[in-house]
Every structure is written in structure tokens, then in C-alpha cells.
Length: 143
Image (tube, rainbow, N blue to C red; front, side, top):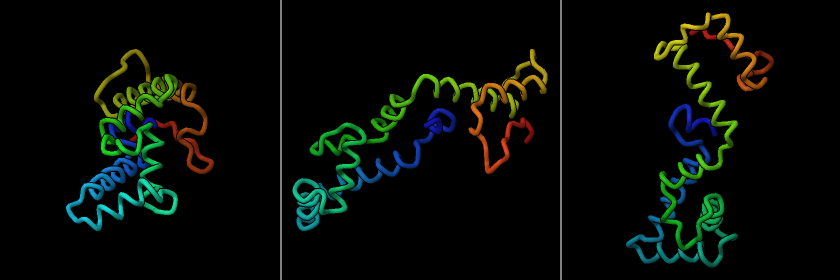
């Protein structure tokens, strides 16, 4: 969930859900009567027996939207959902990490602290295992 705060991109599952909702909306409003009919039947009547119906239900339940309003699931709505679902602690941690990344790459400076003090503050403030890969924990400020 911190992906939106750090990289300004949606998490993969939310991006996939948004694309799925857009696809379902497009085929529901298709000019081809057969495509539109089969999609409508899958989404509204045989929902759990149809892959497109299950996907529509998943998207609507995830973002709190009724099936009739699946067209309202757009990136802006999904971004709002992701931001609303984040706890204040996650937001605080992400902002601290973003500030440290700015310092690391030279976009900002913390002249009050030495490099060793920064490394220590990162190791103390970041929950253990957040940057772990296997058994190694990465808290280095090196490139």
C-alpha cells in the first residue's frame, strides 16, 4: 500500500481490478448485441458461474460499488480507495522513507546529521523485516 505514496503508482491488484472493471464496462456497452447480451447475463444473472461475473463482483465488492455502477470504477476512485485504506502509521512510515530516499539521492539534505546517525535512525525507525530479503536486512544508504 505504500507503493502509492512512494512511487505514485497503484498496487498491482488495484491496477488489475481497475483494468478489469474498465474491460467489463466496455463489453457491457459493446455495439455487438451478442457480446453485450452474454456479458450482461454473466454479470447480472449467472454471476458466480461466469468468470466475467465473478470478476465484476470482486471489483464491486473491493471498492464498495453496486454492480449497476461498475462503470464508476476508474483510476481516480481506486486511488481514493487506496489512500483511504492506509493507516496513519503506514502513511507516516512511507513519508519518512520518502524523505530518506530524497536525502540518499541528493534531492534533499539533512546537514544536522552524519551518515552514521542517518543509518542508525533508519535501523531504529524501520520495522524489522521491512527491507529483508532472505536473512539479510538492507539499511544501507549506499547506491
